[in-house]
Length: 321
Picture (cartoon, rainbow, N blue to C red):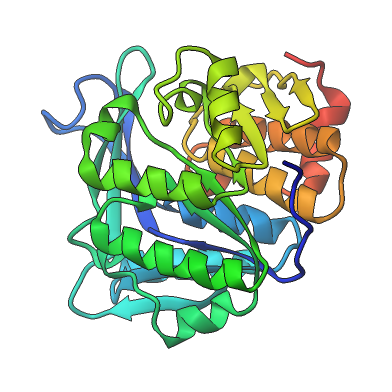
């Protein structure tokens, strides 16, 4: 299959906005008192849509916050970046979602989330959300947002609306192998694989949905489902693009990693935005790799968001990794 034609309109996403509160030291984490830094506005959909807006593309988000400092912190940041927040609902009976992040000695991260019982778990397609979807040219979903059957059902209804209007859909699974044992997560992934046009897995995530044993086998299985394009994020090694006629590998860029949170979201947002702005696939990949590299060089998920000028400057001065 080839990529569907681009429909004018906003890039819209739907899911959690939250604040990240991060451990300063590496170690055992929250088993004992430790120094914390934050709150930083975050959440995969929020990072994605802010990166889109910073690249000059109209963008909006369907989300929920509590009527609290954390919620207003995230909304004000989204507004400053140029995101349409008209479909962010404020709940006075639920708090804004949070993620406490700690770093193990090997540099890997562990998260302590408050999602399902927060305002993020109450997202629904109310009148403002449907109005935003009416302006949607491309709809993007993160796997992290599919944490309940309620949200999966709301996402399904949103996809039906945007598909009926001719919009395209992308999906970043943002999952771990163990998550596929969760009934909600498996159902959500299966739904998205049926309906997405562009699939944006990170490394091993490519193999998980189809239980394939090799990348080649997984790519063939995903194309058989009707997916038009697959973009595999490979962290510092760059990224790979596949469609029915092409396979393109693009190396990454060398930077000093400070915090990897949000790098994949910045990558995906940049690739989708550049594609909709008419760039060739190679340019989309180069810019997306630069966006991911810039993101890991800064602490705080949304602090890693960058402009196209910054991406182009990194590309110009950096040798491929």
